[in-house]
Amino acid sequence: MIARTLSKGAAGAAALLSLALGSSAGAEPQARPAPPRGPASASSGSPDAAAREDAAALERARQGVVLLERKGRILGLGTVLAKDGRILTALSPLSSGKELDARFADGSVVRVQLAHSDPAWDLALLVPESGRWAAGLAAARAPVAETGSTLRSFSLAGRNKLALSRVAVKGQSTLRGGSGELAPGALELARRLQPTELGGPIIDDAGAVVAVLAKACATGTKGATAPCARAAYGVPVSTVKAFLRTVPASAAMPAPWLGVQGVADAGGPARGVRVLVVPPESQAAGAGLRGGADPSGSDVIIAVDDLPVASPEELAARIGAHGVGDRVELLVFGGDKFRRVTVTLTSGPGAAPPKRANPPAPSPPIRRPLPIDDPGY
Image (cartoon, rainbow, N blue to C red; front, side, top):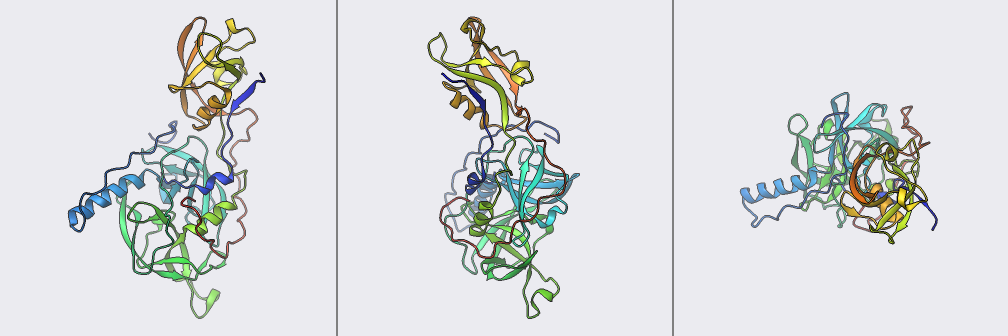
């Protein structure tokens, strides 16, 4: 049987079409399960019921909303993409795009890089340098809300704390973005926003994402020559999806690397993946895993974090569900005994280091939002 290298690349741009929103700096972020959904409120129409609904929506949504910072100063908010780990946000608060950090719901902080942008719609995609945050929100299935309906958005309620605020829809407008007129369909809101709210999701009563808060100017009789009259608006889900379809394949999460080659082995006392090759520079070698053609001298990986693996593909999937910097526990059989081995995942050999130079060139402006054709981004 042909040996396979057990590393898994990050998802390509197609994976961005599903959206989920949801220690101190320097901590190793772990892959975390999505939070359980709280029970729905038993009654409605009373202040207590509304408060319970707000609390439940916040608890579900806040897990996928991150604070974006530079040297500890909060710049805005961001939304984690489902099963992906990358972060959708507004471009305007990011300035140069350098020295950006994302603070997750558990307080962990990870450095992120600006990977893709569209100044016309004030959208940006950030790639974390390590870890993989799993929690998040789904995109709304219905079209954008009607004029006069009430949605919710996030705002700061103290240092590193988020609160939900109600926001009414003023209508769909033509607004002027960073590089010209926006196409009709921008979701204009009937309240003023704080700069630190930019990039956050606008959600409906079920906690599903309807739009992303961004910066734009109201249009007037003087058109593009008029001074900017800032308008609070949301980029609708359909336009976000169009933006994500333009993300280059190179804007990918770093691929976690265990550093072994192996084959499926079901003939011995333990079923799993027999290790054939362990590169000396890998974390697997440092953790003492043994490879080789002789079954008596090589290890068999039985499980990753207590989840069984029976083939190289299953092992690659278990490792790929994590991020660079995550620690995984392997159940290993070798030398006629079982043992547990903890390995910190790294980038593969020859992987390009994260770029800290100038941010990427902006994408061509998206002039017309596409129709919503699926529930995710």
